Amino acid sequence: MEKQMATEVLVETRPTLVMAEHPKQDLWDTVLTQLDDVAQRLNLDPGIHAILRQPERELTVAVPVVMDDGKIKVFTGYRIQHSSARGPCKGGVRYHPDVNLNEVKALAALMTWKCAVVGIPYGGAKGGVKCDPRQMSEDEVRRMTRRFTAMIMPIIGSKRDIPAPDVNTNAQTMAWMADTFSMLAGKTVTEIVTGKPIPLGGSLGRKEATGRGVAIITAELLKRERQRLSDTTVAVQGYGNVGSATATILNQMGCKIVAVSDISGGLYNPRGLDIASINQHVAAHPRRLLEGSEAPGVEKVSNHELLVSDVDVLIPAALEHQIRADNAPYIQAKMIVEAANGPTTREADEILNDQGIIVVPDILANAGGVVVSYFEWVQDLQCFFWDEEEVNRNLRRIMVRSFKEVWDFSREQEVSPRLGAYMLAVDKVAGAVLARGVFP
Ligand code: NAD
Image (cartoon, rainbow, N blue to C red):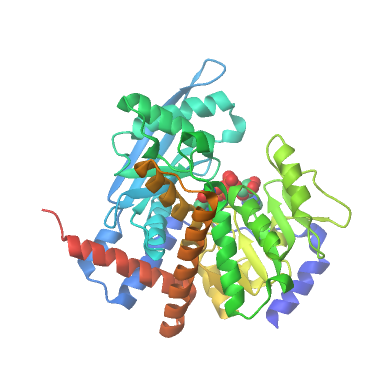
């Protein structure tokens, strides 16, 4: 009732709506609180709990870059390895002005849980450079990438820690990283990174893999909720690698995508957006943005309006902490599938739970990327490449199985899918730590 009233007010005041101020919450704090809760529920050994509360290794590096004007600028970069208990560390590299040590630590821990929940033999890592790539030329980004790779070289390796793309990094970034590592190693090491271009040992299907995984999970969720794909409306926040692939694949599956957004704003059409023509527009835009792609019947909306729009499924696919205590009470979606990492704050999660909104957590929903990264690594190591159909079939098998495990376990334990996924993941990682014992 309260939710409905709030929505009515929102619609009336739409043009002048201002977002409430919110203190910036620390993602590392969110991750630790979640772990502490799970440790208690699992009755985890306090020593194992203490091990999992700290990353195994934290590296901060200074990355000097000669900018195009000839001046030197020094960027700060990080590579964090949270856990290698279940296998080599794995995780993306992010370029963003908000990158900081705690954020990278949190994202590394999320990778540990993610790899465990889908049962692939990796631990978790993450990297990032605090920079604004939108203000830099391609040459500057290339020089920064090469120097960053050289600086983290002592701790990465194809059986140690394998980077991949994340926010504002892509296949080209991975090509520069692979080349830099190879030049310094004196041999070609394609398996040092995943998400590479196909001619350099990349895997077919990797580019769309995270979005494909999100779409598979959404379809599985709808099946459990006895809702047909063709009767489902979807809003997607963020239209980069993950958001655009998710929207495109769900649209191909029959869902109506009614809202999408990126940093330039959002688009809304209750009758469904023309995703194919939006994709054409974004591909031709110099900064790959939605801006300027309005068509007849399409309304411009803010990111806030997108998040609270009246849809069946909301898919946050931008950055962390987009769903917070200030906007969660207004969310009308029945289901949320977390394509971004950490898009929901703890307070918001409680609000959504109380409202009966089903949330499929990031560590399950967006695991498709790391699953196909794993396939890419396996293909590189074997020098034997699969066709796209095989990649997609194996991705589907793992995502469907993992969804079923999390869903059934959560029902059995009477906990949310997030808690269920965390309990399964932490239990697997703790089991590996216990089996290995503490060295020496
Ligand atoms: P990307 O850089 O390709 O795209 C990010 C998108 O978010 C862009 O469209 C950008 O305009 C938009 N955006 C940024 N701030 C926004 C805001 N405040 N409101 C609305 N839109 C905003 O990044 P990506 O690779 O698509 O990653 C998106 C999310 O998915 C991140 O949380 C990332 O960690 C997570 N993720 C990515 C992968 C992967 O394979 N790339 C895998 C798993 C998880």
